[in-house]
Image 1 (cartoon, rainbow, N blue to C red):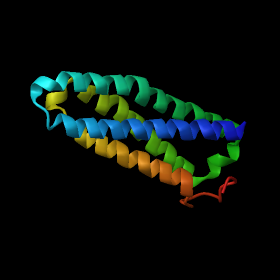
Image 2 (spheres, rainbow, N blue to C red; image 1 turned 90 degrees about the vertical axis):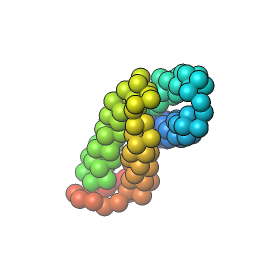
Image 3 (cartoon, helix red, strand yellow; image 1 turned 90 degrees about the horizontal axis):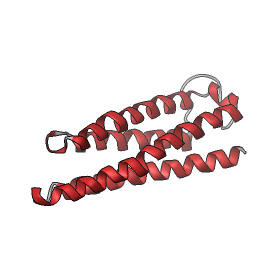
Length: 142
C-alpha cells in the first residue's frame, strides 16, 4: 500500500511540474505573439490549469496525507515539515497567484508567480528525494 501511495505521489508531482513547465513555455510564447492571438493561448493555459495543475495539487495533498496515515513515524522528520510548508505555499500560489492572474492576464505578473511556484516545487521535490536532516529525530524512512 505504501508503494502505491508513493507512486501516486510521484505521478502527481510529475503532473504538477509538467503543467508548470507548460505554463512557463506558454507565458514566454504569449509575450511574443500579437495581442490578437492571445485569447487562444489564455484558453489553453486555463484548460491546463483546470485539468492538470489543480488535480495534481489535490492528488499530491491526498497521497501525502495517506502516506502519513500509513507511516506516522514520518511526522518526526524535519524535512517532511519543511516539505509540507512548501506544499502549502505552492498550493496558495497555484490557487491565488496563477489562477487570479490568468483571469486578468495583461496586467498580472504571471511570470513571477510561475518562477516562485517552480522554485517551491523543485525545493519540495528535493526535500522528498534527499530528505535532509533539518531538525527533530532521524526519520524512520531514511
